[in-house]
Length: 446
Image 1: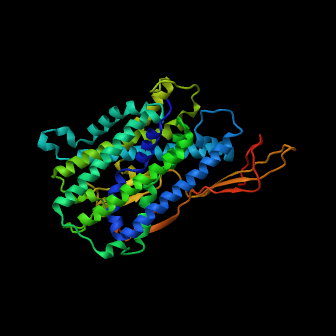
Image 2: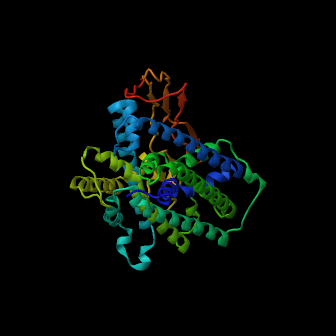
Image 3: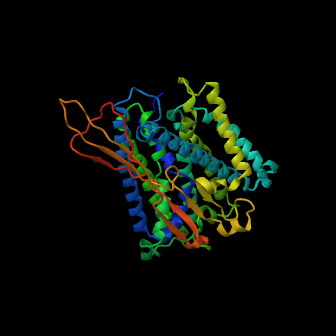
């Protein structure tokens, strides 16, 4: 079942937008409205440019191949770096994205277990194990969905719920805080704060790891670029509006804007309760789309296709169950695991009892770009020539993936925590004369 334009767009938007949006008001306060807006626009354009080039690379590598059901990223990696490239890609998908799934589950557990369940005399509400098991049981049917189009309903629901939570947060600020605006809010209070904003926005525009898979699943892949534009423009507008409104309506809050703006709302308030439940649902609905590429990578060894909405091959069924079990174990036994792979959100006074070390870091945000944050730079090069004597033109196609750390910023507010600033990989195509792929293999210059 192929995905429609709206389904693909919804999946991409959901990939961009998540609970990290709650950190935008504080970073925008220090970065300034003008700088924040320019950063959002610049990074959105850069992601679009990189993805457009990567699509060209994918199309070129497919010219010499028979029709294949392989993941498009795997095809590019295999043609550029052979089996090692496929291994590197699969390792990145499996380790990183399963870690992201665990991080979503950890946040889900913490948000719900910290609510005042004693009011309803529900003793299991404070039990992390209860929420871990509930998450695993409820998420498993969604994990069994076979295609991106089948998952799209979860993405659409997650988008609407997140927008509703944002409205609740801003509405509370309007009702309880005095609005504030000053010309100084337009410009950075400290130019180093731009680095923090850069990291948050880079992560919040991270559609690359599902883009080619989403394109391959579309009914009309030629419309993917339009879907990509929409999925970058809409979140960009939402980010700017939420950040500006958050600064205006929370700058005069008694304790100022906290690192995560939801922490400005008292936990006894219904605004907080509704927002926390909403965010937990966002995490729940984000899980299937986040782990999907990892599931595909894990199932590469399984022969035979599937035709139904859910996978039915017992090997896939058991393997996907194993992924859910692994994330449940990580979420329950290693609740700080989310700080290792995807994002570190320690809610000030709202995520259970923390250690002294965690208290020093509460409210901090350490967002690492999910897929391509490797310590080295991976170069994928393809050298192609058409050897037909009737068409002697030749050229070369070079695609460079820069996945190294773009920079480091020191966050003095969070006691010197390093904030890793990842960016979508750089994909640069150099074309000389006229190029056309023949049947020759692609070689890596490393």
